[in-house]
Length: 124
Image 1 (cartoon, rainbow, N blue to C red):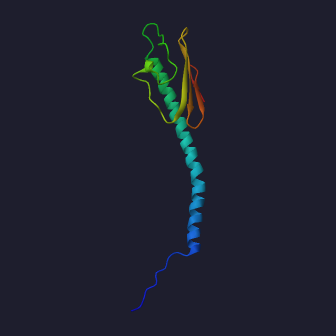
Image 2: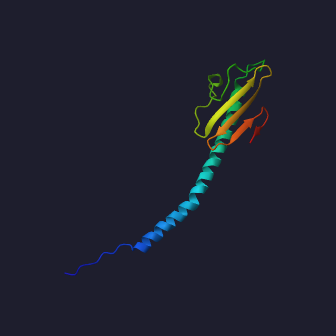
Image 3: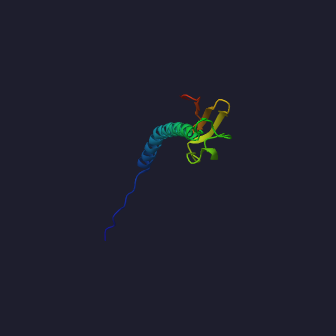
């Protein structure tokens, strides 16, 4: 009875495949990291805009005064519009001037970029 020989891949073929995968990974991973950082920055900007909307929603009718104690976008004073924890945001801070009703917001994205709202525009 004749035996059939089974053949596998040669060492050169395996090394070629491993090298090809390594080259593809070296090209792809930096692009994926860059895309993730951009997505985190965009999510942080959206969070900042939502924070502005939340603060404007809680102004008192007539006087347009803001509630006391707002220090960040997750404060209970901003309920029900306040947002919970967002993975794309590392930190946020709200500074309110109670005499003028003006406020500034600073949001730091998970990628480390800081965004400011100065009461009129978002500054990148």
